[in-house]
Amino acid sequence: MIRKFNHITDYLMTEEMARERLCADQVDVTWYTNKTNTESVLHSHPYYEAILPISGEVLYSVNGSLYHLHTGELIIFPDEVFHSGKFDVGADVSERLLLKVDETLWRTTAESIGFPDILSAKEPIIFTSETVSAWDIRGLFTRISRTSTMDKSIRTRMIQAQLCELMMIIRQIQLDDNQVRPNATSALVEKAVKYIQAHYDDPDLTVGKLAEYTFVSRSHLSRVFKEYTMESVHSYVTNLRMQHCQFAIAEGKTVLDACTESGFSDYSSFLRAFRKRYGITPMEYKKRVTKSIDTINTFDALVFAADSAAAEDAIRE
Image (cartoon, rainbow, N blue to C red; front, top):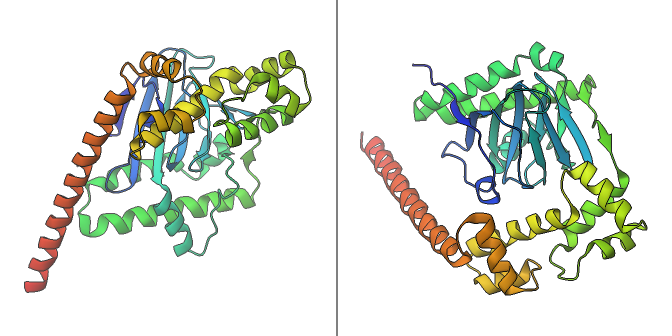
């Protein structure tokens, strides 16, 4: 049996979706299709993400740089790197193949073959379409997807072997200097983004304060910032605060503490903004997250028990 890719159409990323756990194998391959021009919310993942456009184009914004990804090229994001993407750029449809790899699995696999983390600089890397085709990286993604159908006794080792192959290909591509540079980079926006990411929890963080820090006018900063991040300063800050707030609530913080620690100064405004953004109140979100965690813990306990029972049976045999 050949397993087909998971296929999702017109998927709209939210901060919560960006933080979802991967499957038990810690690897996921999915085919995404966007039939309309859409833009993802600013987000980061607790895993590595490799994206290969099959048709159409994607424009990614990362820390003050713009990456215009064309069909056949490959971009790899390290874990916990904030980025946003605009899909369907200059085309009627945008389709892309995504490989997601748990950050712990990625690093332990790299260590097992004596490689340093090839993405330790926390910057995405892009490969040319010619290089991607020559190394048949799309075929490798396909094989990784099929691995889920293998017997558990060999599936884990196969996944690690395939990741080793991917890492060695990446390393060779880097040595051959076949990476693609950002299409545009703004030192001003990079400086502003780094400041925002370090101080988004400051309730007094404003465009004016940021303009003073970067030594430019508010109007100039606002214009250039939107050009390189595809959103306003206010929207960027709000996205970071909302994502941090969700993390804090999921970790067990009260809604009020999560709101305050995330940099929101007006609790009532925060409640309205949260409900408008996600369609539920923060308390409803907290209850849903708690229920989800309980379900996951129960599932993990059942899996552990089943694995333990299987191990005991094997020992007795």
